[in-house]
Amino acid sequence: MSEPRKLYVKSFGCQMNVYDAQRMTDTLAREGYVETDRPDDADLVILNTCHIREKAAEKVYSELGRLRKQQEEQGRKTMVAVAGCVAQAEGSEIIKRARVVDLVVGPQSYHRLPELIASAEQRRGVVETEFPVEEKFDHLPPPTPAAIAKRGPTAFVTVQEGCDKFCTFCVVPYTRGAEFSRPVDKVLDEVKRLADAGVREVTLIGQNVNAYHGLDAHGRPAGLAELVRRVAAIGGIARVRYTTSHPRDMDEGLIAAHREIPAMMPYLHLPVQSGSNRILAAMNRKHDRELYFELVAKVRAARPDIAFSSDFIVGFPGETDEDFADTMDLVEKVGFAGAFSFKYSPRPGTPAAGEEDQLPEAVKNERLYALQALLDRQKAAFDEACRGRRFDILLEKPGRLPGQLIGRSPYLQSVVVVAPPAALGTLATVEVREVSTKSLSAEILGGEFFHGDILPRERAYAGSADSVRTGAASSAPTQEVEA
Ligand code: 5AD
Ligand code: SF4
Image (cartoon, rainbow, N blue to C red):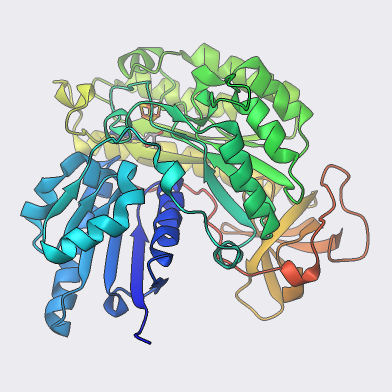
């Protein structure tokens, strides 16, 4: 039998890309490809790219340069595909700019990868960036139980894609297209399959996930609250999260779901981008700071132990010192447990990129530095306040030292505990003892694998110790430094 072909996938950018990378891997597994974590060992390299900011988009070209050098040194041509949002946005430009690239494939065509690779084997320079009418999700094969188990007890599930909001800084409506919601039953089938293979926590993802309106079995549109409710009812699923949301789509039903559904984790990523009403209007965010405060208050009333994270952009065209002071003021007033903050990056084809009052880099740097210092202080204060607290963690992967495991708190913090490998994939109730910038350490009080009770909110796990597994988890949200 011939050696299996080896596939190396590198993902940049958001969680949607992490999910897409897995689905591409699942698709190619059927064609006999096995994963490798070394590009120099691969027969096929896929770069799954991000176009959201210039820095993210440029990363692909430095990666392609590295691949070209590697191939020259090895004297061996590896098939190279560029996927993701840069592929969608730049299409054949990539083939012209980087000779090492054989295939360019946009996010809507991943189900066609096998045939596209076959064409690229015949002829370099295949470009597929159409938005086909058929639903790609219907044609992407599901992962095998072994592949799910290898990825660990947490999983992302794309339930919504694209965006109709057209914030003036953002490329997403152009690279991912119009809003689309997957039907309820398709999502539930996928989650059941994950749960059967040992997944305990799912994060429902979408560029605008709380605008979800997938059709149910009766052909009626269901909102995100209903979807979360049904996902949470699936046996084995103990925790549900969703990301990323738009303030305008935080409806009363979804807010109530935070109170009513115990499996919903008390951590909400709700991007605000700016605290200035003038800038929010220029960004076409369709809401003001008052609405954001109102939402935070309502969600906190529904779920008092909830913590918030957000996205911020500094240095949007025309942003004055007063506008920026309003952002700092909003942060002070809300108090965030985590955040991503970015310097405004003009993106080709977006309205804000054409504005004349672009700010100098030095101003953007200064504001980013000040904002991140404040957000860092808030994150540190939130972590510190967890000292002595009790909550459940999901044990996700081995720790750095023997005998340690790393779990994830309800607030996405990494929590180091002493526990046997057989406890992986189970929930444990812990008390936090130590707090550092990267992680918490805690003592196990009880849990599914251990003697003692677990908190009543969390449901018992139906699986056996045989079905536990190891796997890498995504890193907890920290602040992105874009200096
Ligand atoms: N410049 C800087 N940050 C951006 N984001 C989106 N577009 C841009 C841009 N042009 C940020 C927003 C968004 C996050 C995913 O990326 O904060 O919420
Ligand atoms: Fe981009 Fe705005 Fe849509 Fe978010 S809501 S994806 S920032 S256009």
